[in-house]
Image (tube, rainbow, N blue to C red; front, side, top):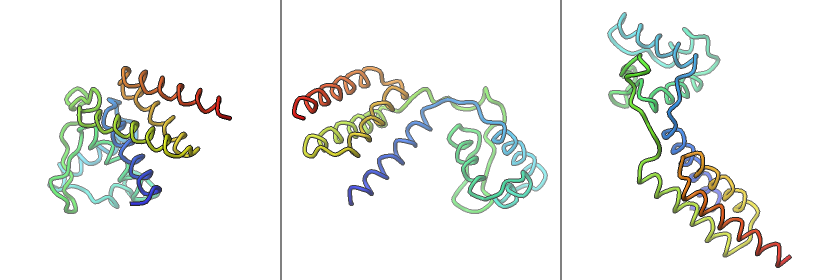
Amino acid sequence: MGSEQQTRLLFICLVHVITNSMNERSSKRQRELLNFVDGFIQGHGYGPSYREIMRALGYKSVSTVAVHIDGLMAKGYLRKRDRSARSLEVVTTHLDDAPLHKGPTPAQEKWIINAVTNKFDALDRQNDPTTLDELYVLVGALKVLGLSGAHVAMKTRLIDYLKTQSKTV
């Protein structure tokens, strides 16, 4: 796997970790979509297609529907029975009943800390501005995820690295 592919995979996984660890209320559009899906299932006995949702709610693309559905699934409001069409199920329409995600799992914590460590190792091997930019993002993500101990340690390591680089210039 090439460096560019690894970087893309890293950021996709990072977005996934952050999205799954944040406990946000659903947006107005997601709430409308959830209510539509719930009503559709009650009226028809099966879930709507993405295209039906798009038309009913006035979205311009099916991908917008997919983004909102993925968000509702991550928050625990919807699930898919299987990978087939019309398999959406409403878990709950009540905010209080949705499962809470209070932060990353231990496996996710380990993954992101390893990702930061690997980026530092890559930066030590070759001073690359792109890798440095990625480190800034990853170190900031540690703070966003609530991993304050790791954030402070990695931020200190980053500052030390920058100090040594300014002395060699």
